[in-house]
Length: 388
Image (cartoon, rainbow, N blue to C red):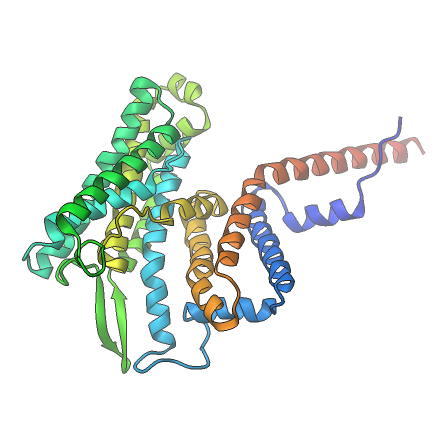
């Protein structure tokens, strides 16, 4: 019985996607391409020019110049504002990636950010400590609090076999409403109805700094976030603990057979993930915002899941994917104000990226089938050539 020959389209798609190593890059790029095409189609249906829409996204992040700027501001101001919101996204995405490598799903990053940010605010942010002490102490407090919150999920996982997704979601709600109670009772600003703004000495984003003749913000945590990317890349790929992390994520039974303590590794992964989430909270609540809005859980921790999947849970891949997704989320505000495209469109594009990135396993399986079929066809062709 003759098999149907592989179509030219399948051959071309396999050629573009490349081998398995190359697919780690090409499949996420393909997901980005599909989501941008879908976003363009949606803009056309809304009667907007997709090119203008995507240009406005870049303008809103300081990647391209705007037509007009307010007094004392410019393209550099927008760029620094973009780096300010990119910083917590980087930390949050790394937090998701560390847990993901160990086969865990830390959906509680937003709650860990909130807890770390709140406790750092009331212990350091409202204190009279000088900047040289307050800023490093803010980072330390957020890391410790985040690590403890992550460790709690790890303990519930290995000691009581409670699914980490369930416990993380429940803790998100607990942190959100308990902290909201304390803010509204003791720390609320009667005008803004948010928590009191932390002191300038403790804040990790410098405000109203004069640079190049423009008044701008300076996100001090951005350099720390870049360092964290390369440290985590080294840790995951070049250390024994990183190897154990990936071994547990690949197969817990096999890792245990090889002598790896899965309980210790799960606890380490969730603690490290929580510490990175705490850093995200430090740079978000004591950096980008400077205060906390009660009863609101930031979407940064959830967007970080899309960033992690799009970057294949690789710290270097996350650096690229977080750069892109932050452009879409941050630039969405300017896209709305400049050409009238609803900001929800940017959220939809991000969601589609997550959807298409999640299909990566299916795409790899299909490509493998095409490759196997081509190899089989080549063998059959050689046999027929030999008979002739």
